[in-house]
Image 1 (tube, rainbow, N blue to C red):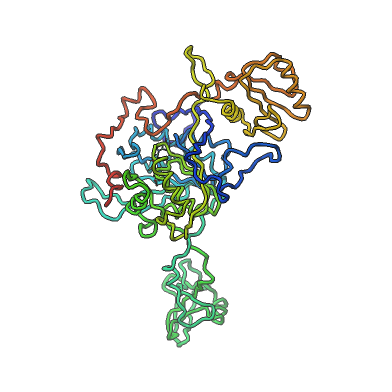
Image 2: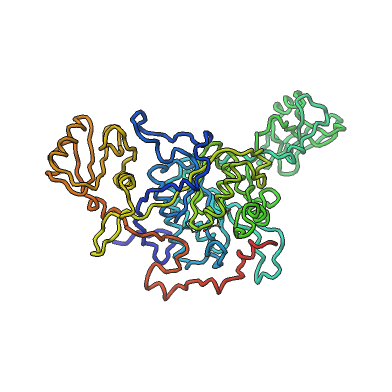
Length: 565
Ligand SMILES: C[S@@+](CC[C@H](N)C(=O)[O-])C[C@H]1O[C@@H](n2cnc3c(N)ncnc32)[C@H](O)[C@@H]1O
């Protein structure tokens, strides 16, 4: 039987997929900021509210997560799958450069694998009417497009917008002076996703005048002939001055004779100030769409460039300036097109935190993930200034930003299981009872929501199905007491060290041992899935692929792009 073939991008290591551990997130309260501010503390949906649950961990909407984004995206999956309206990412472009805050050179196949795994996780988090926007340059753009086609489906490709990232030509460029980045846009489902219109600018509105003092207000005139030829609308028109005008050759008028008579009677046809001109249709400002459709070329005067972005971030950290930020206006355009107020936005390559800053000022909710220490040294101070209303740079003035809101700072918990000195998997000693309970809820598909009233109620999967997690061993008598309390109308999954009873002894209890119950669910104690891995996915790949070393590539084009021009 012949193997079915399909058009696909292949690379070394493509078939290797990480089996990710769904980690819990630990809040670092010292770095969270005004998390209890009433503006941000909108309660997340609690599926079975009314119980005496402690408030859900993410009751505050804005989250900054310090850690590897693949593990972070997995950590977010349970609570946020299908809820994110817009993902913007600006991943390392794989230029081979070594920036101050992160390295940007991994072997090409490895880059594709790293991106594929993240794109798949992002797709899971996106809402059905959500969209993904990725900035990228020519190093990987075209491979990334094909990769996204595979993950999102080619039919969900929306556009490749071109962003003019710099103005000055790079006269020492060996080949061409690269002055743009790509913005790849994919919809989760293109059949239902539609971009918003962009706000009309004063410049656009200035084209509207009112030379005949029409009481309907400002208007501009538009061509009245069309290309699609129809004999019926190819007729001569007599202007008020008596001149006969025909449509240009091989074109015809946009309206029938009757319709034109109606429009003339309504003073909607313009024959020029002397009544002698080729007829044109009047388009009133009050009748045009309340915005404009975005084009795919985005100029620096409209959305800013690398130099603007550098100036913006210098305001937050002038000593160790972040190398590759994006301008706030660029991100604002994306959110104008892809989101509405209060929508949830995710950026899993946060860098200096531009996405969060812009989302915050635009009244959107946000989640950002950043692996580097600049999460703390750059993003936190930037967002604090935004929240305090002290940041009047970027888009602040345009949106009249006055401050407000807050965010919570999280780190990924360590692996739940560790090997002991005998090579056996045991519960990580860094886990206390609450962390273990929360982690087990995640692994077993339960919502963590411990009850004050019932010691065995640690979480739920439905209104009547609960989970209890303990490192203790439970005797038959103890299980009997719990079973009686659970009663006939509820069920309980018990995850414990050991139990002294037949697994089928109590109809309303399911008994599982830790860690055996979860041993094969994922790979354990694997912390680094990051882009800083300069290793190949396959041993034999080393013959075919060359690992880029930072020393060989300093002076690369993207590095220069991000320097002051
Ligand atoms: C080009 S920068 C993003 C810049 C950002 N758009 C801004 O305006 O500041 C890419 C960022 O991705 C981060 N990064 C790279 N690998 C990562 C990973 N595995 N998890 C989380 N962040 C990662 C880098 O540390 C870097 O800060």
